[in-house]
Image (cartoon, rainbow over all chains, first blue to last red):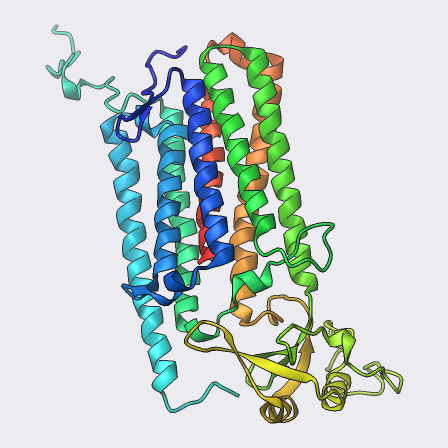
Amino acid sequence: MAHDQAHKLAIFRGTLKFKSNVTKIWGVFVILSIVTTIEVALGIIRPAFLVDTHFLALKLLNWIFILLTLFKAYYITWDFMHMRDETTGLRRAVIWTSLFLISYLVVLLLIEGDYIYEVYKIGFIKFNF
Amino acid sequence: MEATVVKTGTEGKTWGGGNQPLKASYGKMMMWFFIVSDALTFSGFLASYGFSRFKFVDAWPIPDEVFTHFPFLHGVDAPMYYVAFMTFILIFSSVTMVLAVDAGHKMQQNKVILYMFLTIIGGFIFLGSQAWEWATFIKGDYGAIETKGGQIVQFLDKEGERVALRDFAVMATGERAEQTKENGIWFKNESEYYPSVSFEQVKEGFLANDNLLVRVQHKDEHGHHIILNREESIAKVVNDGQMVVEGANLRHNEYGHPLFANFFFFITGFHGFHVATGVLINCIIFFNIILGTYERRGHYEMVEKVGLYWHFVDLVWVFVFTFFYLV
C-alpha cells in the first residue's frame, strides 16, 4: 500500500498551495509557530482593553485564546493527522461526534459552575474567613 | 440433491460485504475512534476544570504568577516562557513525526529512522521539562499561610513585591518537640508535611515587620488579588491564620485554591502519561523500522498509526496550554 492516494496540498481554502507534501508540513509548522508566539505574547502582555472587555461572559482575551487554539487544532488535525486526505464519512464521524459532545458538556458544566458561584456569593453561609 | 449453498443475491452490490466506504484500513480507523474517545476523556477533565474555576472564579490563582520560573534563571520573573518552550518542543516533534510518515509513504527507510529518532528525542525533552515543571510547582516559591477557612494568604512588602516566608519569619527559639506514640495521643501520628518554618515563627516575624502586608485569594474586578492594609493584614493573620503552606500538594497549595493544584497534577499528569506511552510506542516502532519489518511488509502504515496518536498528544497539549496557562 505504498502511497496510492495523493495528498491535498492547498491550505487556507485553496489560497496557499504547496509544491510537495514536505513543504506543506514546514509551511504548517511556520503557521503554528506564529500562532503560538502570538498567544504567548498576548498572555504575557495581557492588553488592558482585551482583559476588561467582556463578551458572552468571557474576557475578550480569552475568546481570542480559544479561537487561536481551535485554529491550531484545525491545522494539526487536517495537515499533521492527514484529515484533509480522508473521506468525508470518516472525517464527519470523527469531527462532528467529538465537536457536538464536547461543546455540549462544556456549555452545561460552565453554566452549572457559574450558578454555584452565584449561590456561594449570595448565600447565607460565608466562606470568606 | 440440490446444493445447499445459499446465494443472497447481493454479490458485488453495496451491502455484499468487502466494501471499504471510508477507504481507511481497520487499524487506522480504530486509531481514529480511540482518539475520539480519548479526546472525550480529556475534554471531561478540562470541562470539570472549567466548572471548578467558574465556581471559584473570583478566587482562582493567576497562572502568570504561578509559573514564573525558567531553568538556570533563578530569581528572574519569566512567566510562561518555559511552557511556551515546551509547546514548541511538542509541535516540533509533531513535525518530525509527520515527516517520518511522509518518508514512510516514499519507502525511504533511513529517513524514517532519522525522523523517528528526532521525534523520540523531542518526547524525552518534553517529559523532562514536565518533570522539572512539577518539581518547581511542588517545591513552591514564597510560601503562604492558610486560614482556618482554607483560604491562602500571601505576603507582600509595601511596594507590592512578594516576600518569601524565610526572609521574615523569626528564628526558632526552642527545640521542636516531635510527636511520638509514648508522649502523645497514641492514635495521632507525626504530621507528614512539615514546612521549614512554623506558623508561630511567621506570625511573630510578620508582627515585628511593619513593612509587610498580605493579599488574599479573592480578586477585585480587574482580576488582581485584593491587598489588605496593615491593620486588616494583622487581623487576618492573627485571627484567621492557621498553618504554613509551602509549595503545592493535593491538600494544600500556596498559590491559591487547592483545586488548582489538584487539576494541575491530574490533567498535566494524565497528558504526561500519554506522552510517556507515546514515546514507548514510538520506540517500539523505531526498532521495528531499524529491523526492516516494514520494508518486508511493503508499507509503513504502522508509522502512520503511531503518528496519529503522537499528533493527538500534541493536540491535547495545545488545549491544556490554553486552558491552564493562558486563559
